[in-house]
Length: 385
Image 1 (cartoon, rainbow, N blue to C red):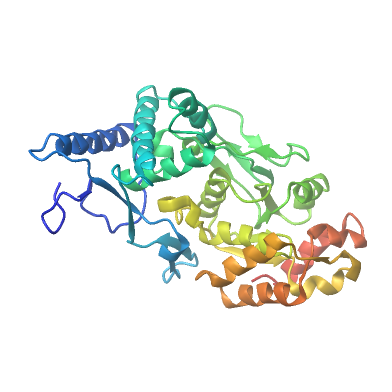
Image 2: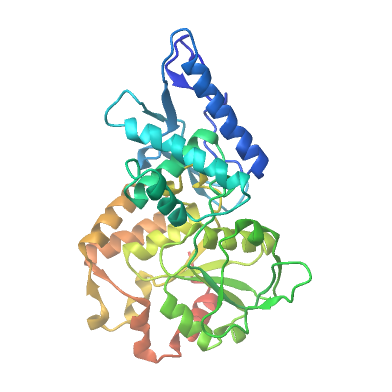
């Protein structure tokens, strides 16, 4: 297929290469895109002057990211611009990456034909078994999957790749995941909460009912466990959600689905006062460039309820600990990004200036039942940003 100069230098499988997003497709449409891609490759090989062209893929580096500030909605998000990078079979540095794309595409086609769903971990072991010379690590599979997403312009889920999940939900929410089945009462699942499914289609079709007034994101599993065990949702009508750290796509999808179902419920995030806590909040709020063309899809209007700099007076000095080297790296990355709003930037700068960080557990100096009171006070005073 010819480029603008008439040469055969890149495979342009679809005309609109400036649209940096991934469609959600039914299996037959995803298979059709794979078939078109393979046919284009074969056409190039059968041309009078056969050659294997470069793969032109969206550049997934932070330098290629942009920010949509949400003019018509309260949601801002990051997305990838139209800068491209090339993977070539004739370049020793990218030849293996070129072949990996086609191998992953072949595997996805088989998965779709069999009407299966696999996690990226399961896909890695299958590829390791079938093509050990091409795939030696999970990260190579993950990158190749993102390359296929960028090439075909369709989501991982459309390719039969299911999200692995760590997420939990508890509180004033009822979930009917399948017709005719008894709804799950998330307030009656004990302190462990209810596990969020990795099946995005199931989540998308789940019927949700709730009398909550808030959605509260909790960074840490231990804090989630404490809040649910204390049944704080009985005193503060809310739904608690945790991804147990950095959010997986299923938990982000679930939060996005709740926010669309109950658009008037504020989403409040409770994270550690450190750069990693803010990074987790920002992933829920703006999306993640690491998600490639799916970066923007599940962004939500998340507000930061705590911990924040004005909470340090509640915490004993000895509970503040020095920033680690990794904290400094995350802070530097966030400060250089385009997504950070000014009041978040001020909080991050304070962390860097003091060289300190504080964990949510530091509030236990006031007693184990203090967290509920802390959240209630913040809500009543409207102290979230």
